[in-house]
Image: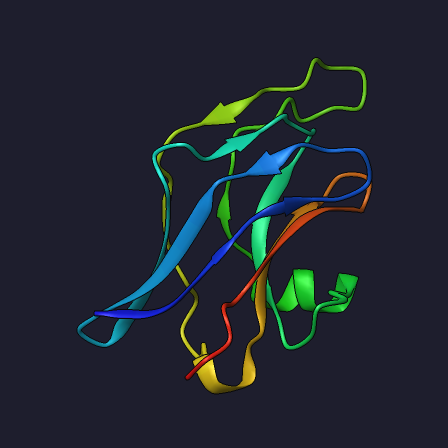
Length: 121
């Protein structure tokens, strides 16, 4: 069952596009991106959740899930990520108090992009 959905927006000069849904599968919640998902790459990117539209580093560390491929170093080339991605959201996720999924670089640290949840009816 789809709980919420949204569209990604890049930040800090990064390209992040496509859409996503958050699905409930039994007692678990999953992030599923669209087939046209695209991220231009960073050293150590991973998704996290935010209670606002201005994510914090603390939220990144406490809600981190779904690591994407990255170069692992500042001197390495960026690894582009394209196509459908799926990731299990950590236990304790509360859709009623979460407003966005965001992409964070855990090496630098740096805010890479956000996917605000569509307004709930």
